[in-house]
Length: 146
Image (cartoon, rainbow, N blue to C red; front, side, top):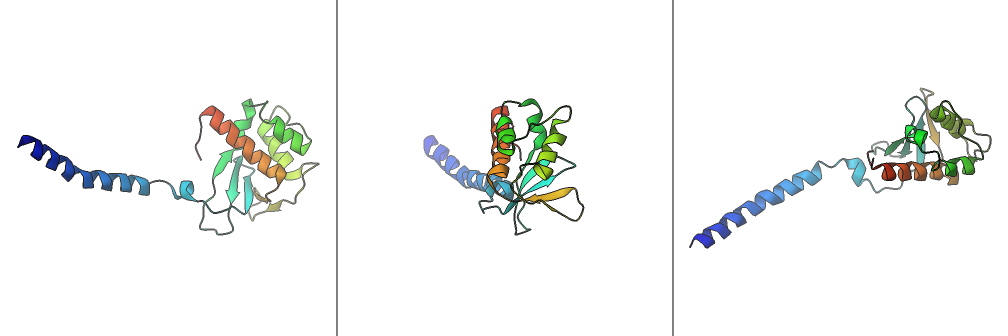
């Protein structure tokens, strides 16, 4: 008789567990669930954030910080190679921002937004390489924050 009540007690807890799991899933940031293809990259030259941008302004893009590149000299060689320029000391982030915005070999046109510290960069092999390197650095550092 005791085992029947134990089983019934466990069954009564299942709906609560299910509701808890569903509520937890709802609290996940919509950014993590956004599977729409992005339209361009956005670079904030003041904060060093490099983000995926969407034509639909209701969608928020995923961002990575260019400051990750400071101590990852080996990983950024792919960026230096694709842009055919070296990221220079002492301000490696500032140097990289300069390359992305006004690089001698950048194969794209940069568009400034109204405040002139945020820029739109097209998706191409060069900008995709920057994104890929930032993802590689994040995953190797164990920092998968957005």
